[in-house]
Image (cartoon, rainbow, N blue to C red):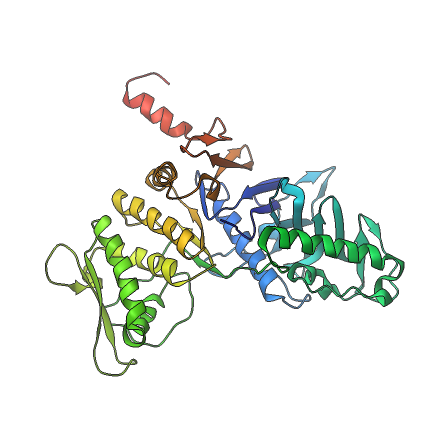
Length: 431
């Protein structure tokens, strides 16, 4: 499979000391102890995704507090590293394409504090050993540098140009760049060529992003067709199911079949139904599931696990080319359900080209990914396990990879040390 951004970079944010990177794949698992930066990593990825996709006005702060992530102000984000009594005053996020070298293509965005909020101060592009950057000076002007050398601009360059190259629309104007126009144009061509070589198109095509938090919406006895807003709780999912049931019977039958297949494999339910009250789509409706009894029951009275995993299941097969962040999707699920949910998501990476970034504490999730690699249901190169290892007051991100028989590589000594110690204690061995 081909994915759009195969690494995410984070520097001097909270527990991340210096530049850290993690490989992103169609299935990316984030594992590690509590308070080791997994949620921070995902929250920063979501913030950078919004920044690149929304083309915000450059005089607006970057949004790091979009649910389910609440990361605070600039000072709550910045890691304080004091050298010679002086603290750092900026942090960096970035993304890149991994070819033969990780450095083949990168964009790094630097943030500084303004009115207690994080603002973009510099955007730097790197491709094939060359660089092009846009930065704010102390005034309102934009400084442009090629390979670290400032360009003498003939007229002011809007800082809004900073993100133009990422979407393939950087104006290369001789009236702006003067004698350096050819060098800027050459860099832009290399950047575009690198994108085309990797993806077959000239633009980066930033993928839509949906984030699910730890708490999903509580099931309701009866639903109304009132709110279809995308949210971390997945409250819109019953409404989506109702719309398909009413307006698109063919796709509803496909979705229902996929859900029922998962329900049977996970031993959670055998059938799921939409029951409307009235002839109009805006009339109230209910979601029913058939579990242990032969009679369908309201989802409110079924096991909590059904309603909690339903948003993932529906989004996985109704969305395409989308990044989905799932925080501990195993919550409320029996190990069999955790494993089958994992295989369900793996199928969605192939059928819908979705990518899943899964923060998990479940061995059953990790084991099922490895099993599916061994059984050739997903390629080893489509899986990344990011292990967040605490070291004193900082965290190191390790990108663990698999081979085609699910052997793990780049595994640090600290990985699973707790489980080894517990096993030794259970067997009666000394520490």
